[in-house]
Amino acid sequence: MDKFLRRKDSSSRTDDEEPNTSVTNNLKKVVKRKYDEDCIKYGFSWCGDETAPRPQCIICGDQLSNESMVPSKLKRHLYSSHPSCANKDKQYFKRCLEQNKKQKKFMKSAVKVSEKALEAN
Image (cartoon, rainbow, N blue to C red; front, side, top):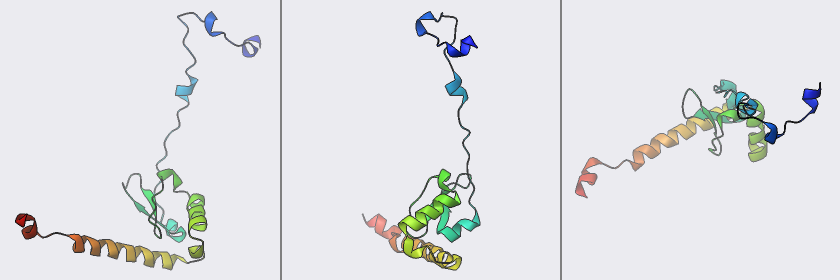
């Protein structure tokens, strides 16, 4: 019992004693969350790597960390950042997602520079 109550003084430690390494043994295991189709009802899709997808807001385009792919955090973003969309149904967010995908495809084709124009420079 006394060994738990007494503090070790760093000066009384000999060279053969190891310092406390409990901090290095308590490393957290990193959990990579997978995208669930139910996240669309909170206004989120995914982007990035398939092994560790990141949630992306359909309305504003914000990308959150992989750890934020929890329904409570997605709901908090929806209610705090987009309160006007908080009562929308799943179909609304699906339409917004399809519209965003069409816009990206259109922008890629509109911004594409022809090879002849590149040669002219």
